[in-house]
Length: 307
Image (cartoon, rainbow, N blue to C red; front, side, top):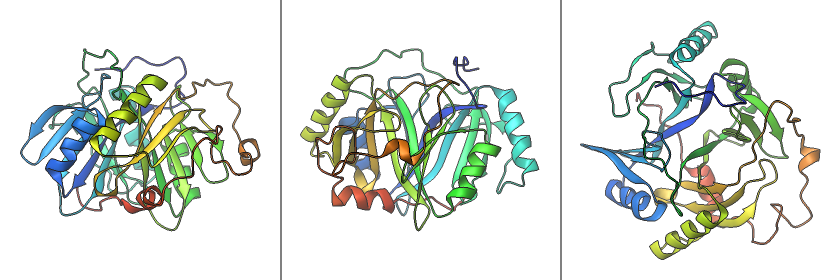
């Protein structure tokens, strides 16, 4: 299915569709995402499960039983099959690593796409024409979609060049620590955090309102998972956030009210995002991230195995 183009679409990619995660605590993690996080099972296979939000995406999280917790693949949706082919040609010309041929996707959700590794070895799948759900009414306390993924990188300039010049993301902001990359009307869909090694920083899920975020926080607290940072409001993106540590140290975020931008948005610099003394967000209402959150934001690595 072709995705209708948004009014502002600087890239042939239009967002993060889903993340594939290998877990050792398979049943426990499924239960967390269903009962705690608010996703529902869209498809169950032997040794894997696909979980959806309330939005049209076929699924937003796919879990597989593995020997260790690791990110297996990040799915990026292109606008249509023609965009998939253009991106493949561009990656081939750039000599991208582990580039597969475009083909129909046999697994749940279907579509047409290919896989490629970014310069630090993260496996990406670029796809279009996949299944879209028709029942997409917002729920008061459940995620709609993946808003963004944030990546720790030991070679930020090279990775930024790959995502902007090759994949077509647009640089929209730099804070003191983070580079924010845009591909649709949401302020950012990918962000990069310089560090000592390659890993996942966190996965952010969009909920429809501030009230929905707080109700989700309440459900997680009843489930036994407390806030690890937040509730607060970021500077770049202006989004409200609350962070949690999921099973096996998985770093997760609920977010809402993400700033909507267009081609007139001025790229921000670190000087634009200097917080008030003693604050890490606009509100300054909560303590800094917990030690468990800081650990989680550095702990989950990307698999080097074939997907």
